[in-house]
Image 1: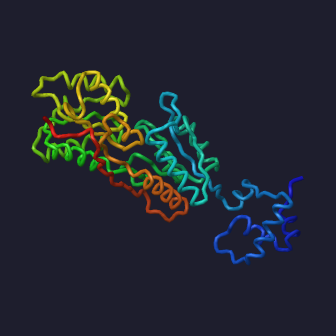
Image 2: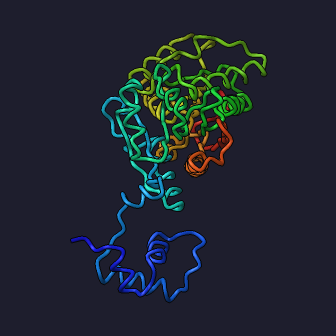
Image 3: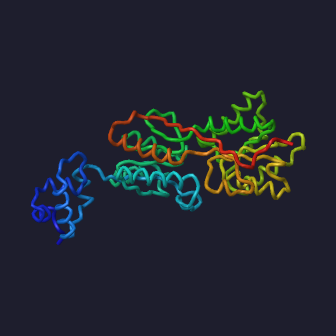
Length: 343
């Protein structure tokens, strides 16, 4: 038979309430250190472990936060890239706040009548939602039933939806301005998958910087595509096939992954970076500094993102947050060796 809390209380010579407060680390409980020690020793000697299910029923809280992440192309969501870095910071911040984290992967884009009952079944107090598709009704369904959640790496105008992201438009503007300041006039932008709010934001920031510099936007210099090698290679090859006086002297890539593929594509074409073409990335993933040459990029503040989303979600759960707050954090230019003035 499982050991009961009554047996712990009897062994320690204290009340049931005292045992509960000690074992649950109740904030503000005024309990003498000696009493706390007796309770913990008694629990250890008897082999008593608090029931998470029972505690959740009493408190109406599980102290568990869910991460909703779609699996693209059967890839693991924790294998690398943006998600893994933010996820690690979420884990760290959640640990500090004494919260558990669970991943709900591959389920998030099912229609809301199918998915919503699962997300409302009490397994999690609230959710972090990554990479929301525009054609999914999950966010509006969450908002309609007041289910606590925070949208990560995206922002919506909907006043019911709280979000945390970087200021992608400002980041794209400053990245392009840096290339302009280096003397480049023909700057191409290689975006990721459209439509997606961060991708569109960086593209708009690129266009803003060109307009401010009096340079007309050339659709040839912002060819659509995705993050993968074949798409990047095709776009780079087409850009470099333009006449020498028309082809870009610099590439602003929408992610470090695109930039990495661009470096390889340029190498296959026999072009040197940065002597023939400059390349600037976005994100500052760990591999960026190991590229050849080391990649100049816009650094995302991953620790700040992780902390902000945890703080925001817990505030929503506690009903102390401003509804639908939008938090856009600044990026930082990291200068390495992949950008130089045009020859």
